[in-house]
Image (cartoon, rainbow over all chains, first blue to last red; front, side):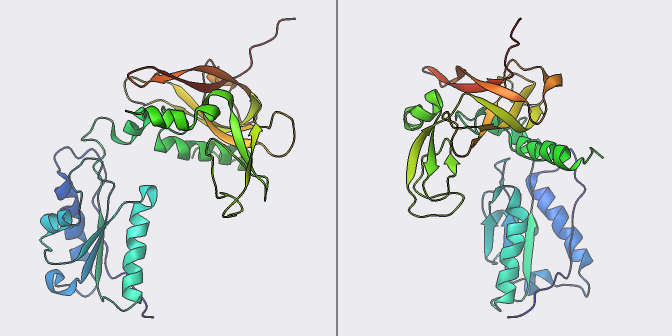
Length: 159
Length: 139
């Protein structure tokens, strides 16, 4: 097994980015990454494969091709990972496995989510017509309940 | 339409029927399963058990932002519902709360199941349980 290393990383500032398209988010993170790589990178030549994480709430990036359009990295195999809150870490995990296995040398792991273009964002799921764990239940609420329980059991506080 | 979905879990939705793993005692609700979520037995044997309509809040959260057609604040809780005959383990259930004073809500609060309309699927009302603190008995 080959060791896998992170050689660069990029991010955009989170916020109400109404002026940014979904592609703009990916592009911004990608540009920040390219700039950060320790010894520089010729990304079109050096990157072998792409793992791309998104739930695509905004319905703007439903396949690996979205990354190509946002970054110019065409002709690279690109896999979309959709795995709820673990989407980002799972995309990373898959890339690490491919590098460790020696199948590729350089992976791009990238992801984006546009939360506010749809007014409902993550809470839209609460409109599900399902009886248990459905109607009136949001994903953030599951974490809220964990927090409540943790605060009760371990006397943790809000800040 | 969504009819079959409600038919599948009718017994759970309307009378709190649950399923107890004969290997480890885990009580599954509302999922009627052939594998056990806790001990991993596959195939597992499950026996039907009746849940009580009175349980205890293990944790909760009050949701302030929901789609427009859902009333807020909407408290949601994880409730442990014991088996009606008092044997074995409780089932751990996600339940919406109703008619509950938010200030009196805490981990450990006792709640009762109330049968009511949860929503309308466009053709008919979908009825099941929400939970609320027991009404005070006047002495």
